[in-house]
Amino acid sequence: MTTEEDWPVEQTWSMRNTHWHAYVEHTSLDHASPRQVRLERTPEEVLTSPAEVAAWLEVNLRSATRPEETGKKRVKDERDFTDSNQVHASLASRGESIYTGVKGELTLAVEAVTPDECRISHDGADVAPLKAGRRR
Image (cartoon, rainbow, N blue to C red; front, side, top):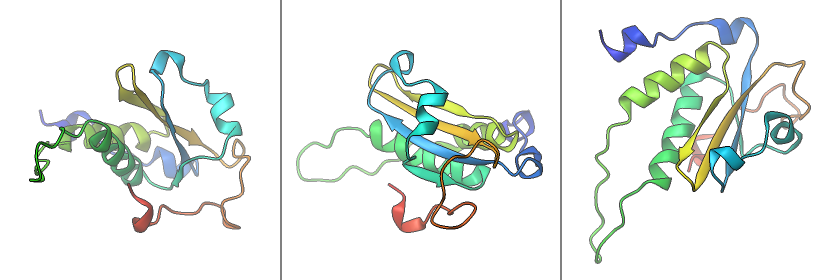
């Protein structure tokens, strides 16, 4: 089986009108804030689809784990995040929150939020989509 077969993208998230609040914490997962504390804070980003969740996680994981550059020559990052993206998109498509990061250094939390749970106004709209220029 392929990753796509093992981790299908569903429509549960859209039926629940789910969006996600994305947070970066510079601490290990075992010391990260609990969900309720995070939801009281303004998120780094508001994500509106499973594809945006997967893309945000990839950008932040790729940035946090980038190989160190030696000398003046920039090294091309050829790491393949395809499997991780499929898993993250599948989990998000079920309306789930995702917690990941870099061991001992960084926690990335993407909290699934329904309109009833959301306490933040998103620029006057129900949800403000992630703008391409704001990706890290």
